Image (cartoon, rainbow, N blue to C red; front, side, top):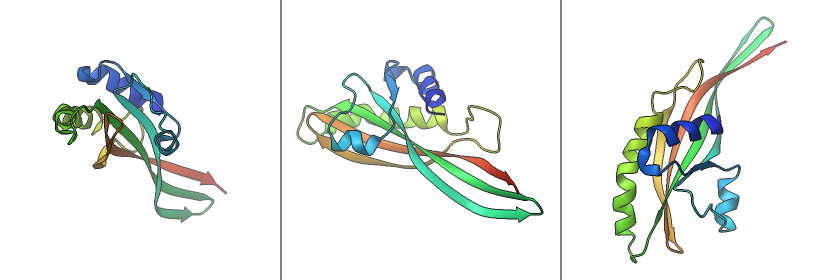
Length: 142
């Protein structure tokens, strides 16, 4: 799924300059201050939220909301981050427009926007996180 999201953003959001990269563990990379130097955005898993389970004869089903984080990265040279935020603001709309309502493959759901937030302005970079989710279905035959 990460590769499909990366390809979609690289294709649909020209202002990201085709510099979107997948990463496995966003929290660890931020903690270790090892964000990709040339990326303008990264995509990482952001968890799973289970819906109400359905238990029928011999079959267990449950909707799973799979979350994905898109971290927008902009150089920030002023103390307040105002210039970087001005650069990020239109990207928020463009990224949301590229993913919301889209599904990388046929299934039971399409991506929706869950939340967005400014994570930090540190070491010359502004980090803004958008989280999207898509519903999938867990199906277990008993």
